[in-house]
Image (cartoon, rainbow over all chains, first blue to last red; front, side, top):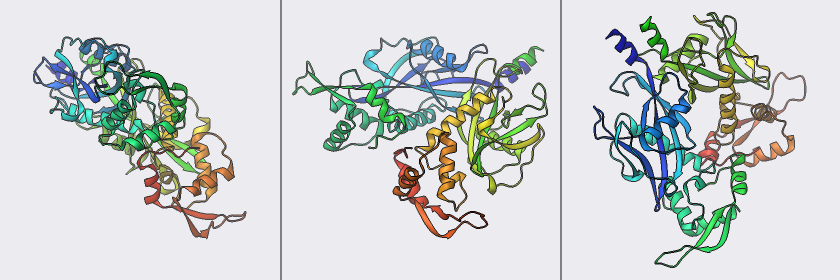
Length: 230
Length: 230
């Protein structure tokens, strides 16, 4: 008992905010938990760190165990340490985030703790387990800030994309409508978009031109953190 | 014993990287520890979080206990969780940083753990205790990045300052010489510097004009995170 108390008094966990972009929508990866007191609640993929693993390793392991996802570049963004944030006792959690192209990923495989793993639109999230709503909001805020000074768009878009898809991505992250003409003028002015000799395939409506990022130029724009201002 | 092991297996601490600017030099706040195994080593101010306090409170308490400093705006920047980072066992540490005008602070008061608290130039730091050299470097890197998209200069400079002081601050943070003419042209072009009708006092050499930040304008520049590129 005494032992338990001490054990529960200080532990640390990892929680992952994984953003994906699909069909013009920004989504976040969630699991449905099997364990009480949060049975059947939606939560961010997260679990305790083991005593013999570093927190970076732990983040990779935990995400893989709960969702089947692998080889993501996970970046730490904040640690949450309110005294009563977790019903099991004093557990602080280190939050990581990552961005992926949903279509580039194999199917999700929920693990031990989870009955489901799913992509959920960021626009109509229900209340999440624990303080995961706050963790998600903090991660979403960081993502928004980084859009202006880090080349994150190509992590979320397919290799070849239309300007409409690019605008949808910016609108989803900034959570506001952007003027089509201004957006295109601005984006093309940076010189990091390469127009291809291809158009969309299998679309009912008029097929749009496809573009690619010139990664060298795209990264250069952000090197000295000049923002791409929307 | 078993109890001890568990207790030592997971704990968390706070470490503070406090930057100050004085006489044209960027400095970091260090303490000299009293306790083994790091007796007389220089270290960042840091200590364990108590089970009944949130990590934000803990950061404020620990900095105050070890250095006497109060009312700093501390910002969390990274959590370090390598398995063997601490000789006492598995302790992850949440690192905070803050910026202050050294001249605006009352004298430093080292607390319990420390025999000294002092400002040390960032340019010739000795090896610090634990992994504090790595923590310092990470904090310094963040500071550098933030210089381009957050209005941090006025937290470090006196209310009234010369353009030379402003350039010295940028040079200290970016760790490179900047061309005087270009620097002044650029800084004045942003419109957030207010020229005063005053000059420096008690200087042997020719007294230079004093400037103030127009905070409203200064913050506006950074609102949408357009960088101030050097």
